[in-house]
Image 1 (cartoon, rainbow, N blue to C red):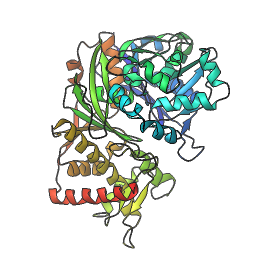
Image 2 (image 1 turned 135 degrees about the vertical axis):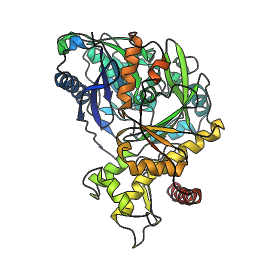
Image 3 (image 1 turned 90 degrees about the horizontal axis):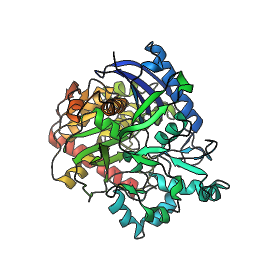
Image 4 (image 1 turned 180 degrees about the horizontal axis):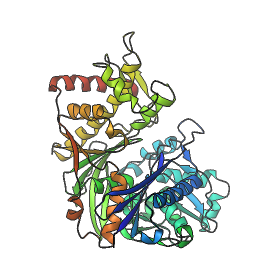
Length: 493
């Protein structure tokens, strides 16, 4: 009997479901756009009901396209946008407020104040993170402080917190399971990644009752079932994992020293460090890559807030392009940007700068610059930010990068991948399946039920589609990168 694995990839801008067979070939696929709202400067929100409804619609459509029933699905894995924060009533399931998205910066003042105290050092040591609005803790506190009656309800044990995975699981199981995996827990600022448990001191400091928090499980575990009331038959949920860690699984970044970059709304570069927890000296994050059968793997992570969202801004706000794909054509139409740099600090700058108050700028404009140069500068900014991250990683590990595996919506742009290879001076590899976030969730689900036995077996499923070798002279790439550093310096002043 053929095994079918259903993968949910609940991202920032799309709800996506892919069904794979046992050989990890795509059987069917369905996705729906997910709306974001921006009620104030720096605020980013989503409708929790849309998160749930879109996901259910995608599951239904993917099953229909494949001519499958729920009874024919062997297992389900869930990958999700991380840090996005929801709080809901444990009796009714009704959220007390819209989902506060990971990009949201409303708690910047509070985080800056806390970061300057002794708590900042404690957070780095225990969570591998830094006090920043990016993570969930300050978002939870904001909800409890600003939603009428929330603090009292929380103290009474009437509210639950979850990232998107937990929220979906709770509804899929009709409130029977309130759980998350270790990779999502590790992004809250509340989880001790060494002791592997919620940290009571951090809960006190952020004024968050422990009763809100979900149970923390391995990335591959029995989480419950999508209730039969949804699709006529229960579907086992045997994996949950943060989207970037899931892409590590899908990209076979499963041994120390391997590295991947995911280019979607933002960009996230993760370096597998194995069982060794490396405290970054260069403003990177130390976090959990995955935990399987109780065995923990760590990674270093660098985050870029604006990658694909920069191209979306050029398309939707400036109307410089009709579709995101047009950006490649424009980039190829000019030989350079005429020294124009676009620094996409729309919601601040993340690693290695971590300046939540920085704002975007286009630097170096002259009468020689036009739409093509600015669009090309937008694409180039993704490569420059990637180099920022990889230089920080090299400094932390003293082990230079040899190959970068890439995935995500932006990597179908061959011009961009060639420029990244040139700027980093290392080969860039694109896999046959670029939906590696969904792939990783499916792989973990299959591992948990015994369809696969080892991580090595999962790694053997990875297939190369195209390799981009560096072609640009080193002096040229160094000059371009030096110009970028000057542009960033102006934004940070």
